[in-house]
Length: 153
Image 1 (tube, rainbow, N blue to C red):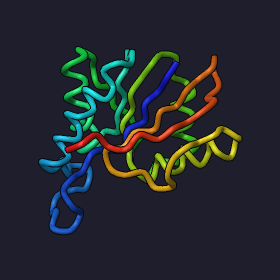
Image 2 (cartoon, rainbow, N blue to C red):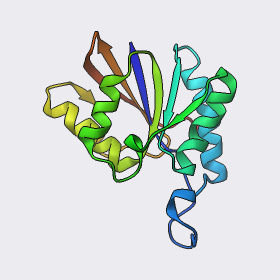
Image 3 (cartoon, rainbow, N blue to C red):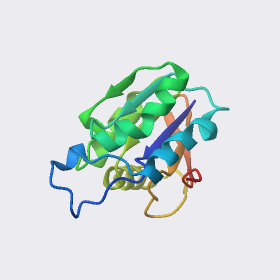
Image 4 (tube, rainbow, N blue to C red):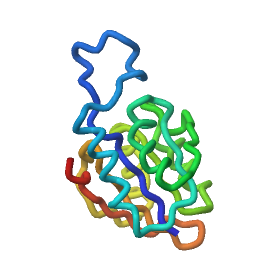
């Protein structure tokens, strides 16, 4: 089984954004990246979509949800500032192919927690916005992770 952990696409900058940070939306480039996920993930079975409740994460997976006809589940287990172990617990509880969307800080902690366990993680230390970590499972164990750069915008 494969899980896809997506860092939210390019969002408006924190500077100049006067509203609460969780409401910060995607930019035009970010919307193009989110549309690009459709083609990038097209060959893969995905039966669940799980997102941080932050607008930029929801908007990143929304086009994929629309095309696949899947509901978009939201959880604070993927929200910005969440601990690596909490995100890892969510990933380990998933029993079907899924795409998840979270934030750079959470994804880095998740990748680090997997690497500490000895899971080979092939990719950069800091993921780009709109990029994806592909986590391969064998039974209940994650056995490998590889990085995919963001889709072209």
